[in-house]
Image 1 (cartoon, rainbow, N blue to C red):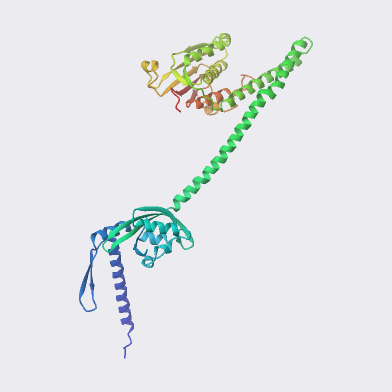
Image 2 (image 1 turned 90 degrees about the horizontal axis):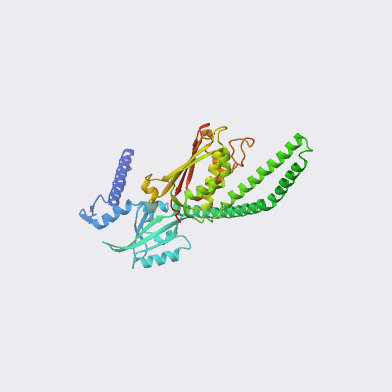
Length: 429
């Protein structure tokens, strides 16, 4: 008759079982991590048996256990002989339940044919493919890399699984962003088409009635100037002046919109020749204002001649327009290559960029307006004092941008302004 165990005996037996379990767990961990090369197992008959863990298998186990990818080893039947902790985590199952199962059990529905081809081919040569494994009701996209290994137990098939979930999410986001970008490009093309239509309207439909307003207002003023009161003449002058400003604004808008086209037509050009043309165009204005314009030797650069001429027209006319009352404008245009040597100025083939400085002794402006001055329709002075649409410097900046250059300005109120331009000597692409 079995003697009933006391409570103390049961506690002692429980402690012994816990200790054996901990020893077994430690032993398994030591085997998996490669900390031991052999095991001595006690037989039921009282003897002992030595089990050796070969060095090649040990290195393999240590390597795959430390990997961030899942790893499994299969036999010829496709049974899992070994797997690392990462694979067990990928399929959300305890490690002990994975061993001995068919790897095909974890292949998601619809991918078994792909896996079978990979498995069959993997014994002959290294192979790789993408498929999904099942994790409960969830699909996990993976890349499977297969190679055949010669272990002590014989040949085995090693499969490395790389989780592609994050990569697939990024690819999906990129796809959505590309679709959105295509939509935006389509919208921009439609917007550009609308702008071109507006330019056509501005150049014809708007200018025609404006031209008639100017003609008939001027005719009426000249015909009735002796019959009208001074007040009525003033009203006509205001109509004529406003019409002229509107005409100039329309022409400036047209000039700005035309810069959106891709017709660059770059060619190596003498900047000094371009400035000479501008000074010739402004000869009467320069004489009227008694302006002094000093132009240093400038390099030859690859530009769109017509557009760069417009840049110098805008900068020179601005300097003359915003001169101090009672003081003759003095404008200096200088520049060179970034090597800043006389030799490199004569030969621009080695230089990457050139710089141009346009300075004046005009009224200047507050540094608070440095950023705004190149904005479309931005005016720092009222139209009563200075004529203009406020588009000239916006056009200038857009031209410089199309030349892959840059423009900046420094100024102080009452102390003139200095415009600094940088242009590539040669346009790329």
